[in-house]
Length: 304
Image (cartoon, rainbow, N blue to C red; front, side, top):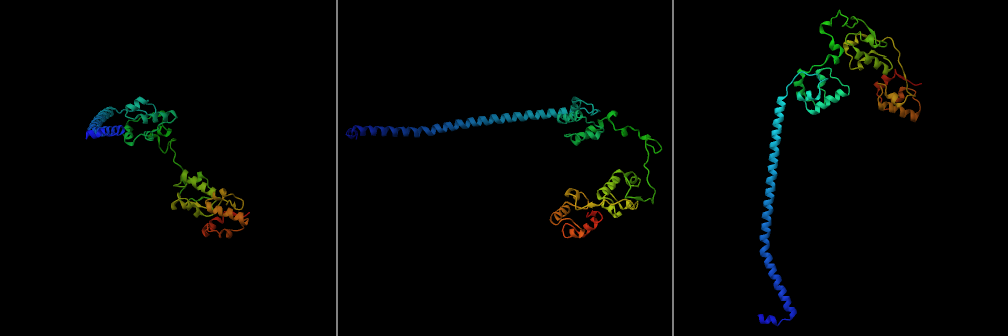
């Protein structure tokens, strides 16, 4: 066989030698590569395992520190000693020693710097961030200086007697008195039993925006008026202020309690298309107006 090899030409022999070398190289690679890959994989896996173990150790150490820090915080919380304090005067250190968080302490200080004052223990509870449970713990220890107390709070209870100058009972009309709701002001209305400043202002205000009362039943449109109050009223005086429906703007029309936005808009649209309104019957063509609506409006509308 080797003799035959020398019968090949020089180029053929060179090609055979190269081929043999390539085959030998491939055999070597095939035998060596799996072993090398296995070693690299093993080394990589071992490195990853060590890195993971190191990470887990760090996490555990961090958790232990956090736990110890939490225990220390709880210990400090338990160490807080509650004592009497004035929220209008206590500084940040004193407030912190009472167990308040730095966030709540800052809000208290900012509130005072803007001119705010705590006039009662309950006023402290409105500070943003102060939880109800914490406030309830502090409440028995809150002491407000007399300098910021409301004037009524400074009056001793034993001075509030009916025969003293400090307290004077409001005069009320005797049973059977009738008050003309068409002209009465708030002072007179407050003389009716059961009516104070709020209700009297609502009655006068409603009469004003309506343009006057034409019937006592209109008072029942106010949710603050009870049947018991109605027996104190009469309607004799007062004038009805009419609305010039052909001249008022949309906003002016809708300001009346008996007209809503869509009804006011219907009036404006009618005026644009057909000219002035001559009677309420013209408005009855619009679906926005019911027969009851037109009946209520009849006393307040002028077609001038």
